Length: 76
Image 1 (cartoon, rainbow, N blue to C red):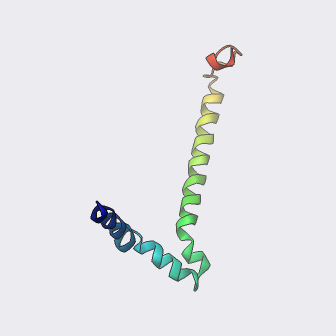
Image 2: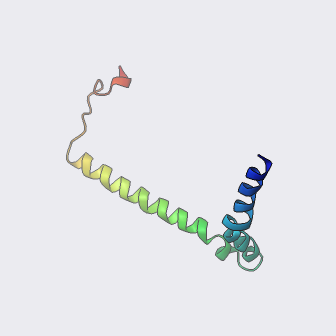
């Protein structure tokens, strides 16, 4: 059983975390470059937020939502 968990450790440490080791070494030279993964996630989140707001506005302009106070069961 111990070998199984050591194999999992080896997989993560020796294979899957190699890109993060590269980012850690890059941070000493270039902070922005080391955080490019974070910047990409923030950009994706911002684009998703804008898309969601556009869709909500489209439904709001079509008056498709029932705005009656009793329209949702959790408001009873």
